[in-house]
Amino acid sequence: MSAGIDLPAPLDAAQGVKPLDFGGHGITGSVDEYGRLIALNTYHAAHGYVTLTAAAPFPEAERYNPAAVRAYRAGLAALDGFGPLISKPVRTREAYLLEGAIPHVRLTLEDGSTLESTTFASVGGVIQIWRGDVKPLRFVGTLSVQRCAYTQLTEGGPVVMPSIRTRAELFDGVLTLENPALYTTVAIAGFAPDLVWQAEQDGPLTLDLPLATDAPGLVFTFGSDPLLTREDMLSMAQVDVDLALRRERRDWVARRPPDARDPVVWRGLVYGEMLAVPVGEPLCILTDHMLLPLSWNRDAYYVARALLSWGDPIAVDVVRRHLLWMFETADRPGGAWGRCYLANGRVKDPAYQLDQQVFPLIELAEYVAETGDGATWERLRDHVPAVLQALLARRDSAAGLFPTDETPADDPMAFPFHFSSHVLIWRAVKLLNGLDDSLDYEALADEIREQALVAFATQRDGVPLFAYATDGAGQVHFYHDANDVPLALAPVWGFVEPDDPVWRATVDFAFSPANVGGYYAGRLGSVHTRAAWPLGDAQDIIVARTLKDADRERRAWERLHAAAQWDGALPEAVDPATNAVASRHWFAWPNALAAWLALDESG
Image 1: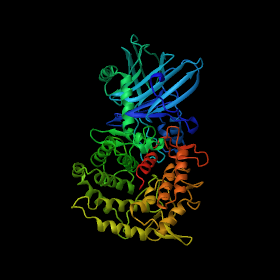
Image 2: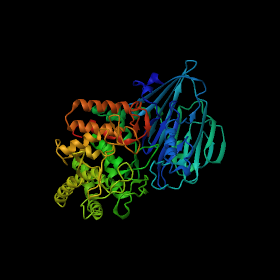
Image 3: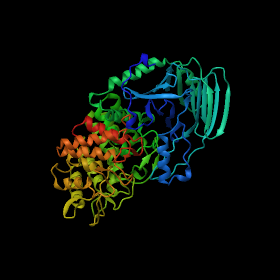
Image 4: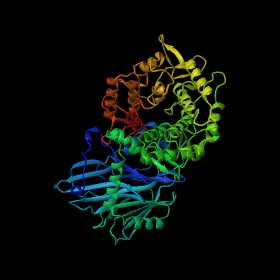
């Protein structure tokens, strides 16, 4: 196949092999190092996100066992996929990302023959092209149609897992896999046309079926009814797969900005857009597609911020539609957003986190200010007073501060008032002030800032700095976390001056051994996963820019790149000595933050 396709440099396996990801048109997925699929995922109106997967179901009894959750999530990055059987021993494997977005795997077999696969989303489904000196003859794997597992380290309330009963039927070259409990069917074209076969089982099915000898590859599509999904598949199977691939590559080439040549930066834009799930006109932005296909307002903000800075019309429209999802689709019980959401807008975890209430306001204000989209502002503006009123209703009258139940890492708070979330509230109110003539929040913004500067200012060993949290009556907690990006951004936004001695002492503390639980061999991390976090390296870039320390910024970028896996993906956390993934191979937020910093030098 490569005789007719231009290939970039192969990915470097020494950087950390993980499944390669693709997505678009409402579908996401990943392939293993042999080019075989490990999962295909799509939106589900009742259950949020569903998957055709090689993964076994997560044991429900282990929902509150962090060790079991970590082991299951790590196992997803090492899954053996399903699809064409590689019938001869593989001598070498080469992996590529065409245009930084489309997985392509080239296998050299023991006898010197080659086999190549290219996988991408297209309108209506997913196309996987298989070509080379040998022809795959059989489709092999153990797979099922499930609701995604939603495995959380800090489980906020399990959602009942539907049955994984699987029905399969093959005729006329199309295989359908149905989960009746989900009303979800996956149709796959590319099988031998003369075979008729059926099977049903309570759980995953193991398949070993003959493929058509003349098919260019496999085509997958999702639907709700087996017969209708089969009809959609028969229509999609007529697509010219080579033409579809050329169009897909051409589109990515045309849209890639010059500032996104860095694979870490480009990953932030491509993956962020892949995670935009259509829910009618609105779009939900997921935190990832494999481990936690849920939405946190915090994570989604940074993805949206990167897409807005990209400025590409398609990317900017993702932000517009995401605003519709947050303000019009996502439930707000009692006027407050939950900790996290299913893609359909249903609250998954109801815990109250202060910053989750604020990020949507900032995203809306920045979007309107930077695009001039008056129509979207008029559509959503009436939500702003209601959200602010819900915030003010929780404000502590004695301290003048706003409480939160959890940190931005989903962990319990030592004290109810959290400093970086107050920086965030001030930022939101400041941006909203003056968006139109009816909004006058200047006095409120000034009041929030003044009270926070007083309430959180304290001393540690005689050095003035800002406390991480306080009870508002003199007790404080000293700590800083990789998730608390607003502290690093405080001078950029104007909450403090760049030379503010208290802010400088606070970031000095943050990047020192005194920051117990948050400092790992010179890098910022979190007690949530006790290791170095790429989000901390991104904070180091922000701090270095504020301090005008070019060497520090260069070193922070080097650490960020060292943490990246072979496809540019940044995990949640890494071993600070080896940069091996310590937690979460998939995580949209750190790449999105890196992309924003690269595209917007003021960030």
